[in-house]
Length: 80
Picture 1 (tube, helix red, strand yellow):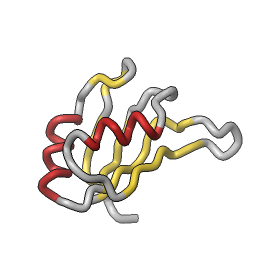
Picture 2 (cartoon, helix red, strand yellow):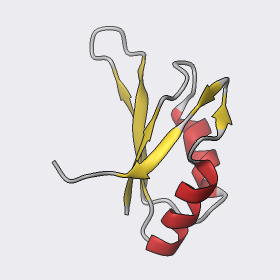
Picture 3 (cartoon, one colour):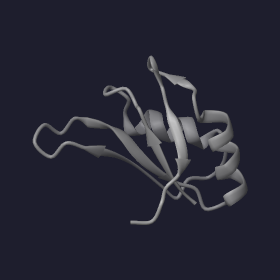
Picture 4 (cartoon, helix red, strand yellow):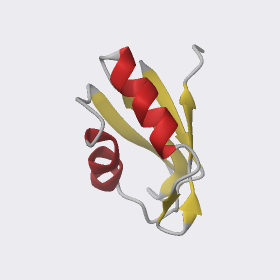
């Protein structure tokens, strides 16, 4: 299941994001969306977890959690 993670602090790294979600299961992929001009985080990213049950537990536990001073929002990513 692909998850959208929003409201990330601009200094949160991809490694920190991976570590946060790895607590709840295996990750297929993890990527921060970066500004092409500056290379800095745009404050959101995507995490893919192959097991739906683990993804749902991650959503439940991480949505609204304070990470680096920002309350992150986690939900299932909608297809484009």
